[in-house]
Length: 301
Image 1 (cartoon, rainbow, N blue to C red):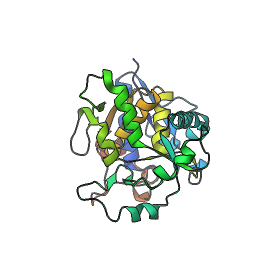
Image 2 (cartoon, helix red, strand yellow):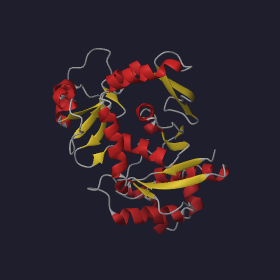
Image 3 (cartoon, one colour):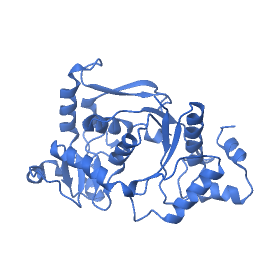
Image 4 (cartoon, rainbow, N blue to C red):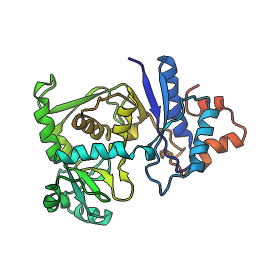
């Protein structure tokens, strides 16, 4: 099996040192394994994506010495694939429309039950306000367009339990292989109970009213379409991997091996974001840094 990995930046701002570390790590691993490194453009949010940022990120990555086959996959060109996945989940009775605003979700979370987690990989865990209210819409065989759709995690878990009868793992558990580590050092075979997903993750958004497929659905469809065997990304996405594995199982897609790496932080310990222009690759280039300097800065030299 050929080793295939990818780097999937959003063209919404400059690449910083954290991006460089993740891309270099993935590219180095692909070269070491005589495999393939792919670049994927996460531009589903067309309100923020800009052609000039895409051109800049490609220029920065090429300057760092990374190579990838062209044309690269651009998510805005793959809407039909995401629609097909959403249609399948809808036909399985696993999705429902949600009209809650962020304020609605915050207010519903103001009085949490004792001992029940309030935050998951997507922030505040959704209380399920629209789950039953959307019963009539869920009965329709045609998926509604232009609305926010959530995955009914409880129903998804019921289906997973039914599919899991022949598994070698303990009852109600699914898993993924981790070769890096989670924020707490967790590594190896990561097994988790489907029962815990409703409490710790909740009904995540898989389609958005404003730009169609949400990140969790798109990344799963993309990785399968590109035959990705190894996903290399930051530890901030470790907890979200459970969502991705659930969607892979539901859609009948393969689960890659995951490698979650440490995050590059500023001197105060804060994770870098695109607003950290002072640590943008383009600025280091302008100031005379070399690719070798960047490698040293992120601990790869």
